[in-house]
Amino acid sequence: MKFIAIFAVLITGFLLAYATIDMPDWGDPNSPPSTHVSPRYIEKVIIETATPNMVTAVLADYRGYDTLGETVVIFTAGIVCILLLRRSPDG
Amino acid sequence: MVKLYENLIVQTVSRLLIPAMQIFGLYVIAHGHGSPGGGFQGGCILGASYILMLAAYDIAELKRHMSETLNTILCCTGVLIYAGIGLLCVILGGNFLDYSVLYKILPVDPVKARYMGMLGVEIGVGIAVMSVMISIFLNIASAGEHEGAAR
Image (cartoon, rainbow over all chains, first blue to last red; front, side):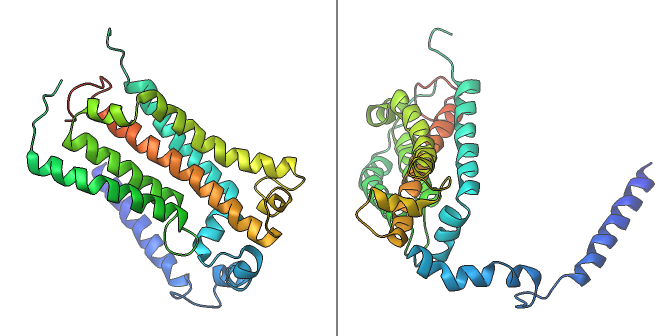
């Protein structure tokens, strides 16, 4: 049984390592992520939002809905911490 | 319950450091548009200043500055500011979180209105992250009992 597990791990690792050969080079300007929305953000972010920090503009404006979800996740963590751990003084 | 172990050096340094940390946290939130930073990072710095207060003093000292009720209200207020700005955009006739329609209530043009909308959103995120950090640390450090010093 242990042999099968080691075999499965090795095969999966080999396949994953083999798949990285097809990945685009680091910082390749012709790779799919660099040709889709990145140039548009880099060119238009000052014109459209007047914000010098591109990361903030993408985080809070273009991807604002995503950041709302992140904030709700943090909020949920805090509320759950209170609900699970907080004990009143009289037990 | 853990007894407070008083240390003059730690308490004096904390008393000097906490206001500087809070000013820096507010700077990171407010200046997130021009330099690295934003609501999450600034909120963490603000939360860390209160956690330092909790570590150097005891829980009663923290609660003198930030009561449990106020902390929980702030926790909800931060998320409500974010979602409220999004809903305000819908009420003013745009899409959800489309800040450019905020120019109707702010004395700026639509491009600058997106800048201001982002600033409001970052402030909401900062408030929420700060109070969640305090709440998590306080509840885990005292096992939910909220008395004595932090373990």
